[in-house]
Amino acid sequence: MVVARYPEPMPLRHPLRLLGRGRLVAPLAALLLAALLSSCSAFGDVGDPTDAHLAIPPGNQVSQPNSTLSLRVLPKPPANPEYTVIIYHNVNTVGEFVPESLTVKVGSVVEWVWTDHYDQHNVWWIDQELVNSPTKGSGFKWAVQFLSPGVYDYYCTLHPGMLGRVVVTG
Image (cartoon, rainbow, N blue to C red; front, side):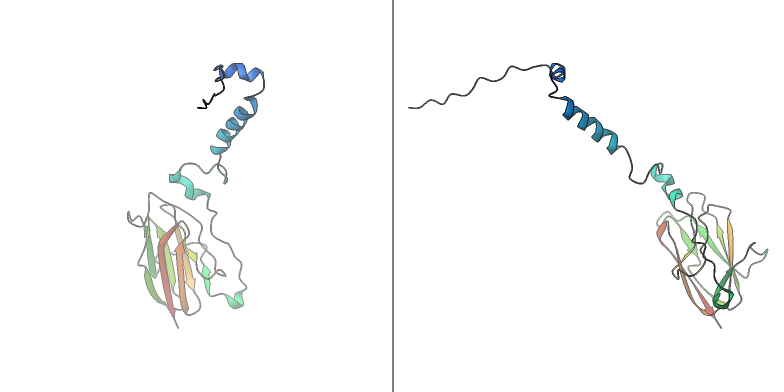
């Protein structure tokens, strides 16, 4: 009968004693580096989740030649706009455009009014040639005059469930 002999176990040594011999320096340095890097964000300091939307830049300010202008952003919203879209807080979707769909005539002015005290929003056109609104919070107003008939779909870049449409008739 053969009896297997196992080598004697190595005596336990205190981890700090091994540091002096260089055996744990590399693993500890790697562990420290991993801990430091795991606390960093690849996107930089964007704050906590409640204000992460602030990292989104304002609307895409595109200049259009007058010959192809299908809508015009008014420098100051009118006192009595013909149509108003309210942007408000909805706990199910984070926000909502009300009304979601609107039919207007060519030349009409539509004003968007931000009333959501919890989140910021924007009006971002599906047609990338159009001028988008800035990202703002409650109290902001933005008005557009529609100069050409068509269907103008828009959404909030911060909240994918927020969709709207303006149908402009001739």
